[in-house]
Structure formats: structure tokens, C-alpha cells
Image 1 (cartoon, rainbow, N blue to C red):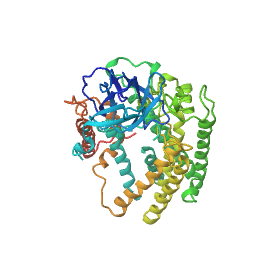
Image 2 (spheres, rainbow, N blue to C red):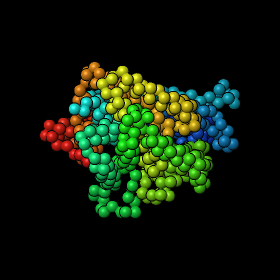
Image 3 (cartoon, helix red, strand yellow):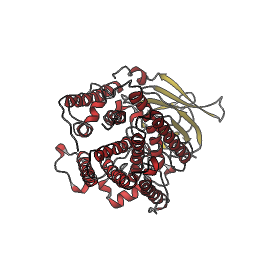
Image 4 (cartoon, helix red, strand yellow):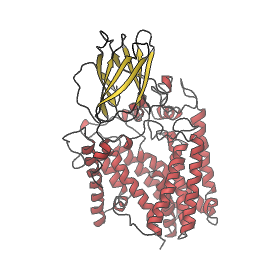
Length: 518
């Protein structure tokens, strides 16, 4: 079905393994055929998928064998059933290692009816994570907050290029930022413009124009056609990362301009209470639509991936209300066609992780970042006050996340889910963001142990780096033909070289004083 799924093959000549794959030989010593099925431990409440059938042994002591290829990304559970009455013989949870060779023996114990299933390692797997790890490495200006964005940008480029094709650098299939620090920058930049005697109307005009540009650039880079001919308007994708940034930036910047105009005599949280009221109303709207909007043929309030998840009961309900709103408002052909949930959950319904409903929570994320910026402005140079408030916000947001998720991946009221940009996803990331701000602020502003180099340079040309790495992704020196495309080491080297190229390019542009601003 998909390359990451275990795939059975009936011949005994083993094919060459790809990344994140292992050989498994199932030896059946029973007098009945054995059906081998599997499910990933990373797949919550999923149906078992058939791997293949191993014929019965022709005679005692002469087992029949069939070879399979299995995934090594996560632990999987093998279920073995007898075909005549689908009797469950045994369940075998096992985490196979990359490029390992394993045998699974299915036999009766001491000629009794009790079936034993045991896995034997014939060839040890490679330890790709250790073996390959050697591969490469005045208004008062609080530059540290920009370093958080700079670091985020460089990491994002590396992950978008593939992250060495390691599974933990890939997007989650379902449950499992840059927007936050953008909100912090909004507070500081608008304050700087107003102190420079710019009018609120002129700042608002800049905000609107910048948002329009971000949105347009986003639509451009997510609809590449290059050598494929003219792009059809019928399948133009509308949502995207920059589009969501544009929307969040527009709303949060407008709220900040509005609040500062009315409540500048009051400080900290009280300063922003009208904006907080607007954000809370938006959050109530998200909760209502997510949990109360009727979705045809789906349970109300569904937050799952559809497909084979939830025991296959809701295959066409991917994303619940969020997916339904995007398909109704934008049309199926104008949203992302291959969501990450396809890999494990075998979904076939288009779903956009940057969709309309999730944009409400991205506004909340940016607004929390804005609050961090307000703390910086109102407690300027009071290091203890800034750090204590950052830690307080981190604690409160972490407590909210623990409550919403019940400290579990899948069983909470609202799971942490990047695809949906769920409320708990926002509170969790914002919690980590406040803690990271404390660390960087203490390192850069308080102790002055680090200047921000070399991450500082991409941050000075963030739009150019983001657009460039998307548009030129397939071109040399960012990508080249590999001698072994199934090697994590080669992918990791290529991705690190590509990312380093953009750091170097941004450094050259910085030295030449070339900056692309919008």
C-alpha cells in the first residue's frame, strides 16, 4: 500500500532492503495455514492489516516459510491467526531493527495444542543512529528573541530537506514554533515603529501589505510546476505555511495596534485585556466548531485520522470538522492531497494541516508570543522579572496541556495534534517556547555567552531563505544523485550540506548588506 508498510512477498529470494526496513521469515510448522497481520504501535486503535499467508507444513518437522519485509520505524505487533476458523494463535509485539534479518517460528509445544511464536535474530540490525552520527555540525535591542527565530528557521530548513530521512524528523502521522516567536517580534517591532513616531494608520498599512505579500508568496511556492506546463486553477492549493503566518500576523498585529491605542497607561496583561477578549472569543469559536459542528457520516466532535484508525469505523472522517470545513469552503482540489496520516493510517481523504479552522489556534500561538514581547517591553533590563514571568507562563501553559491531554498521547480530552493545530498542541508548544526563551535570554542577554552566530545570518534574510530553500530544493548543490539512496548517512550529509549552503548564502548577503524585506 505504502512504502513504509510491511509488504509480503512469496518468493524466497530476498530483495535489497531500503531504509527503515528489515527481513522477516515466518516459518509455519503447524498443520494449518497461518494468516500474518500487523499493526504499528504508533497507530492508535487501528485495524490489523494483513501481511500475508504462510501455508501449512507439508509434514511435521518440515515447516513452510514465507519472507516478508517489515517496517522498523516503530514497534509493531504481529497477529497470527489460523485460516479455517480465524482462531487467534498468538500476538507478537516486536521492534525490528533496520536491515536486520529475523525468523518467526510458529509451532506446537511438545506436540500439544498450545502454539508457541518466537522471534529469532539471524542477522543483527545496523545501528544507523550511532554509526552515522559522526556526519557533520536607543530602544534597547533584545537580540536574543531573534536568535530563537533564527534557530527555528535553520532547523525548519533541515527538516524540510529530509532530516537525514530519520523517522523522528518527520511530521507526525496524527497525534503526537515559528508562529510563537513571530508574535514576540510583532510586539517589539510595532513598539519600535510607534516610538519612531510612525502613525498607527501607516503601521496598519504596512501590516496589511506585508500580510498580502506573505500570502501571495506562500501560494506561489506551494504550487510548483516548473517543467510540467501551466498550472491548472482547478487544483491550486490555497492553504500553506506562509499563508497561515500571514493570517496570524495580520490579526495579532491589528489587535496589538488597537490595544496600545486604548490602554497604554496600564501594563502587562491588563494592557492587553481587550485583545485577550477577542482571542478568547476566537478560541470559543474553535471549540464550538470542533466539537459541535455536524459532519456528514461522522461522529460530532471527531478528532481522529480516519482511515484504519478507530478500528476503521470512520474511514472518510479525517480531521473531523477541520477537514469538513476545508473541503466545503475551499474544495477538495484546493487543499493538501497527501497528508502525513496516509503513511500509518492509510487515509485517502485530502486533508490540509494548514487549514482554515486550525488558523484560529495559530492566532492564539502568535498572541502568546506577543505576550512574551510585552513582558520584555514592560520589564526592560529587569532580568529577574522577565525570567520569572516567562517561567510562570510556561508553568501555566504546561498545566493546561496536562489537563487537556491527561498526560497521554491519544486518550486526553484534546490530544496534542499538529495536523489539527489543536488547543493542547498550542499550549504545549507555547510552554516549551517560554522555557526556551528563558534559556536563550539568560545565555545571550544576561550572561552574554553567545552572540547568535551563525544562526543570526539566516534570520536577517528569513523570507529569502525560506522561499529559496523551497523553490531550489531539487537543484544542485542542495540535492544531487546519491550513490546509495537508501543510506541515512548520505541523506544526512546531503541535508546538512544543503542547510549549511543557506547559512553561507545568508552570511554572504549579510556582508554585502543585501536584505529581502517585506
